[in-house]
Length: 404
Image (tube, rainbow, N blue to C red):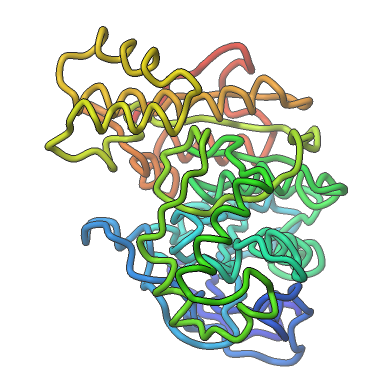
């Protein structure tokens, strides 16, 4: 599908195409299939993946997007590209966060005008969420949301030249769940043929082992009163699956991530990533988004138990460093979360650059996103990395401090 086969719109020197199908689903729990061909109106957003309204305030609507906009053809991409005859432009493909439970590439935060004005073709995408995308079920493909992103990258390889992009210069970047997904995707054989560079924003190498995922499957099956099989879950409607997942909490220790979702990519063994150039980082106060007063010592110990085989020792180390339980809990969750990114950086076989993002005051989870998608020093570093493979500072072992 070339851009000449799409009806887009041009705004302030940037062409925008929305709701372009990169794949279709013949079966919600099956692999993505090639999309239909033919001319398409791409002037308005398409539907979004089934999802519940996430329990965050209205200030995060720009990041999470419109919620569930029903429709069968939600495996779509949006594209921003300069209004010019330029060719072989660097391409950046963004994978949204949302705890593998919610979100959309159509969220207003991910508007790509700033990238296009800097000579980058930006692609955002939707992928399957919740149980439909990530529940580990016998008899159906594993990590279906990841398969969707691979299909989107295949679409980029085959069609992005029609938008002025270079299919050989693709930078895959994502935040939170999107970044965790990228780490798992880069372990798929042949990933280096689709991706030249990658950026992990507040994600790291957080995955579930099959035994951890099996506990989630068993808990959800019990809640629904069905067998833990793909055949049984196929009979459950989208709305009932979404409702059943809401509030599901399962013991999946030792999960060093922020711990707010029952889903992760399921990986049997250590990740062996394609040796692409990799930019990896976190925010200074990731867990502030999830820690609310009142916090008790029991809350601290529970968080330590989820993350470490010696929870009393871990909790004591934070009591010694911080006075208030809320500070102790936020620091514990943030620093344990950071270990996923640090381990990913240290284990990666390719070139690695690392960063820590801060603000005056505090920088919680998601705080870097406005600075990535709007013009400024952080945005410029991302564009530079996608264009020449260097964000502007020395690679590992340097940890570069970024600020908004």
